[in-house]
Structure formats: structure tokens, C-alpha cells
Length: 263
Ligand SMILES: Cc1cc2nc3c(=O)[nH]c(=O)nc-3n(C[C@H](O)[C@H](O)[C@H](O)COP(=O)(O)O)c2cc1C
Ligand code: SF4
Ligand code: SF4
Image (cartoon, rainbow, N blue to C red; front, side, top):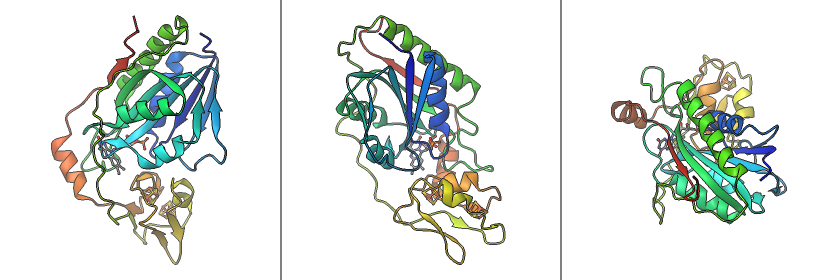
């Protein structure tokens, strides 16, 4: 089949899913690339991807696909279009996220042909308690690249019929946890009120009132504001950081899945 175009579709507040999407797309090696960034807003109109191949990459939140990503992915439609699916998690576990993403893209009209669970620096990683710090690193990117190129070998000989992609995970999916009202807070002495965090918040949860504040309702605790504030003025202290640091500091490696028809 024709794979001259690769469409990357990603939700990626702290850019690790984006890095994996790009590495997979490079590995597929199409001459044309289109990017559909759903990190900052839900597309106003539906986007229909009918040509080439789509690469989906989203983060794992609580063992599931990040809920905001799910809401926004409902605007992306395929028409029997082959898809590579990737979830990126912070070295703890991805539980039912990959199977959930597979089922979702299928419902949206895509044919998932390969899938992977990759590791990204945990949103709650901190300099003094690192969790998967700096990942995806070069080794991860090489694995993602090879995964993309292996998928393209399969696709070149694929006639377009349905294929079966089995991935790790269970249905019914893991139950979601109860949303808590905590958000990152601002250290006034360090904040210059530059407004950058307002721009890069995926859910428009930040406002400049007398000071920079987050509304707990839309805040998804993605920690983009914490990681990207140029003055380290945003802080999110959660007991998860200690828990993750103590229990999930060992290195985990990506897991890859190909359709049963893959030879
Ligand atoms: C609310 C929330 C829940 C998370 N849940 C998990 C999880 O269940 N397992 C895990 O290993 N990492 C978890 N993470 C970490 C992210 O999956 C990880 O940092 C990922 O690389 C972020 O992707 P992004 O850089 O594309 O935003 C969670 C992060 C957040 C913000
Ligand atoms: S990015 Fe940092 S310095 Fe700029 S307004 Fe936000 S918290 Fe303040
Ligand atoms: S305010 Fe909440 S949703 Fe917005 S960037 Fe910060 S952690 Fe993410």
C-alpha cells in the first residue's frame, strides 16, 4: 500500500509522547509528514485521515489513556486507514491504556496494525527524586524508529484487509480514580508573570489574577506548567513522587506488538 504520507496525532503536555510519535514516524520513512497536535485544544471540525498511515501517541494517566486525549481523539476519523498506536508511561505501568487506545482508534475508523508502550519521564519526576528522568532517551528513540520501520515493511505488502492486533491489557478497563482538587502552585518570589504557563496549559486552567493561579476543575495535573516555567516558579508536591521514586526507579523497556498477520 501507499505510505507516502504519515500523519502523527498526539496529545503530549510534557512532550514525551510527541518524541515517540516523531521517532516512529521517522522510522516509517514516508516522504510527507502531517502533524495533528491535539494537546492544546479539541479540533473545531472533525479531521478525516484517509491517506497513508496514522501514528497515534498519548500519555498514560492512571493506567488509562489520558481522559483529555480520549475526548479530543473523538474528532479524528479514519476510513480503513492503518494506524500505529503508542502509549507513553512514566515507568510505573501502562495497565489498560494500550488496549483502550487500540479499541478507540478502531471505533474511529482506523485499522491498528502495530502498537507499543514506551517510557517517558514521569510528570511527577523531580530533580531530587527522578523517575525515568530524561526518557525517552536515545535507546528508546532507536527502538521507536525501528518499530516504525518494521511496521512500514509490513504495510508495503499489506493489501488493506482487516488485521488483528493483540496487545497487553484487560477489558473492562481499570476503573478511574476519583479526581482530587490539588493543582500546582506558584512561588510568587520566582514568578515574573510572563504568562508562558497560561499559553502552554492544555486545558486553559491557568489565569493571571493578582497572581498566577490554577482552577482545580479543568487542571489535569499534567505538570507542563511545572516543567516548562522558565523560572521554576510552579511547584506540584504530591506523595506520588516519593512513592514512584522508591518503587519505580528501575529501568523498564518498551514493549512492542504487531498484528498476528505480521511476518
Ligand atoms: C495524572 C497523571 C497520571 C499518570 N499516571 C501514570 C500511570 O498510571 N503509570 C505511569 O507509569 N505513568 C503515569 N503518569 C506519567 C505519564 O504517563 C508520563 O510522564 C508520560 O511520559 C507523560 O506524557 P507526555 O510527556 O506526552 O505528557 C501519569 C501522569 C499524570 C500527569
Ligand atoms: S511561566 Fe512561570 S514565571 Fe511565567 S507566569 Fe507562569 S509561573 Fe510565572
Ligand atoms: S495548570 Fe494543571 S493542566 Fe495546566 S499545565 Fe499546570 S498541571 Fe497541567
